[in-house]
Image (cartoon, rainbow, N blue to C red; front, top):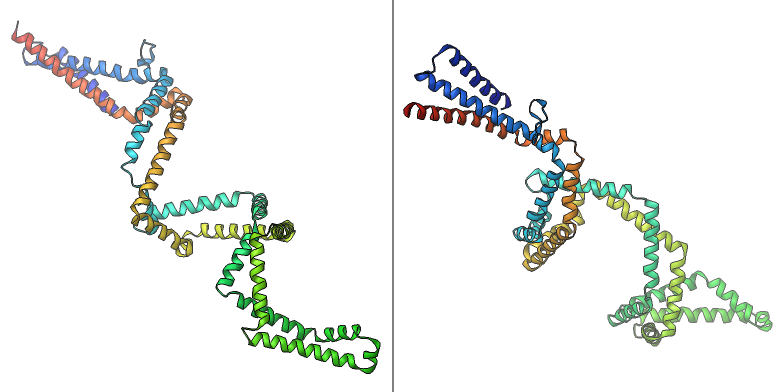
Length: 405
């Protein structure tokens, strides 16, 4: 466009010189000469105006030329103020945000993350890579220590005695303690069988010399072992055995003491604190973090597999909830709107300052080149229009001069 506008100006100058040299100024040639002369003047004037915006015409330091390079800092400040006053005001942003259904868009994306269009796939893959890079770049040892410390603090602050008492009471209320008693009886019977020789030896050691000399210690041990076996068999076979009832009563009393007895609570929490402070629990907590970190990295690096598993089902259910519960969607949109409006109100000046600081950091050649690339084509049209309009004005004036001598 610059070459076209300049060529048109040169053409008008050549036409003017040609007509002036070869043809008389009267008659039809006078109109041609007036058109060419005025078009040349109009083209030169607009060339000067357009050039003066970006540089000194012909390199001459004419006042009020090279306007943009000389005023780039003021232009940046004005542009920043314009953005702040017309775009980053809470009122404008709130009005714009009311038209956006962010909850609906999030719900549709989560419900059909692999739907039509490549943007969703790129978004999911990009988010996955970002999460994977952040997790991989983090200091694993330091994060593990933080997780271990946080988990230990949470466990140390936990009052486990009422929790255990409530859980035991609930289990007893649903007869879940029966299985516990069955397991205890079975374990006792197996332990007795495995240590029968030891039990017989203990009975023999505690018997008197006379019993050992007469061999009655073995008889006593046989009777004791047989009685214990019989008791275990009766407990296992009879759900209504009195000892079972006494054990159930003891469990009920234990549950009550766990909930209400301050002394029991202190004892249980002291045991809990010893367990939490043990290196084994710390290693267990750190191991949990390493497993979670490895699983997160694996899923983040393979978003398709992650979306096909339990995580994908959870996200799809969340998306469906956002689409089917208008009140939840409304609250989410309201939260997003308030968050964006609050960000604009709190950080709007900093955002627009980025614009002014960026413009200030550019050198004169950079800002001139970028603005010329943005609006230069339209400015060259101004030169073309100036040339043609100038020619028409000259033609009109010549016509008036001919008609009104």
